[in-house]
Image (cartoon, rainbow, N blue to C red; front, side):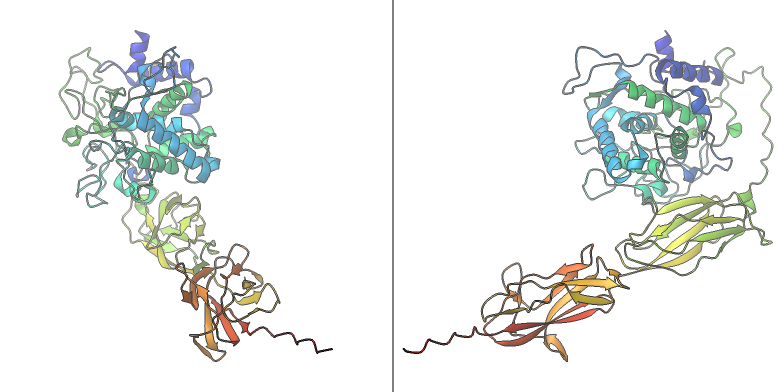
Length: 583
């Protein structure tokens, strides 16, 4: 009885208080390292200014099924094709889905070792969002066999998020919907999507791509998942609900106790959702606190993961239940009063966003921009507004990123109304791009900052050896030409260079005779492009060969930034030794 009760919140009979008691019981029996107080304290409360677009899922509905009260119990037998013990059915994770979580953990261990992301956290979120891709209904490449879509986020019981992807991922050109096994909304996937299976595409419907993206999303802002407060904040960034946080933490500890692999398509399917009237959320929809899910009405889909099929007679229904059925508002109760109008938030007072002292933004490829990007939010009267979310987005063809490798960052304004973006780092792609600052939750004109990435350059080139470069006609030069590039006295790494056998000191056209390089086919070439100095600013040219022409020839090496070096090459016939005179 207890195990069955813990497995699911009984429909129509479980109040919020009972649900809290169930979580507490699970915490006591399964998670000695994480207490209920840990879940409810530091970092667990979402901001009072909740914006659905600030969460991975847009605060879409999710599955509320709880794990069994008993931890997985090892058994002498093993799963088919697996090497783990068979425990509770709920502990089984479909093979491909489990593989995706573990591969994502391994990738994050390399790219963001300070995050300490456990794969069990991805499993916990995947369970709550889509029931592990609907029990592992994925193909061999990890793509779901049918789309997993959340309800239409049109403001009818859910957030109102207008279409951002032209229907590319969610098939809706009017509003966004959460997509795939990890339930990303398209606007979040646009910057957080990853290619987890190496097929060259970023598909939210693929569990490898979605799991890796979820890992990066959780680890952004240099979070450390081994620190409870930062773990809590990361989970809340996925869905801004304390109930969601408690649920994910509960599944996290359950999976940490033990899990095993089951064949794809045979995983346990959840049944209760946060937008069911019977799952402890049968309140007046208009009084639902920010960040919690509400009945979706007619817009939920039968495919939904975190937005799965509605419970029978559940979603959006306003028909009163008979007394004693668990309804919080039986017919004899007075109708709930309308909530008082919320006072305006600081965001509501913002009418413009201004440059807060940001200067010219330039950087050499691979280097950090020296200038900081700062924006100030103001009222119509020009008064600074604090506690406003400002989103900085990198726009344009560039591989520049903010610290942490992300292209989007959201910062809250300080007491002076200023939000300063994380440090901006240039990639290898040169040219101009834009950093756009917008006020989250408020339609005011965006503020654009122009940024320029210039090519790595050198202002000096020298040979690393003074040895003469000479050979006989038809022979090859014994020594290869090596040069060192510097910029302002420091080694210039990654600088592009060109090497050309020129006609003369005053004529830079390519010489059609004399020394030459060889291409991959062994053919003579006298110009090499696409060369780059190494990390120490060194560049060693390929071996040089001589034709039958004798004389002194010139090799000219030029780099981005204007550094030039001309090297002499001599081709001369060997001098014969004099014959000994007759005695």
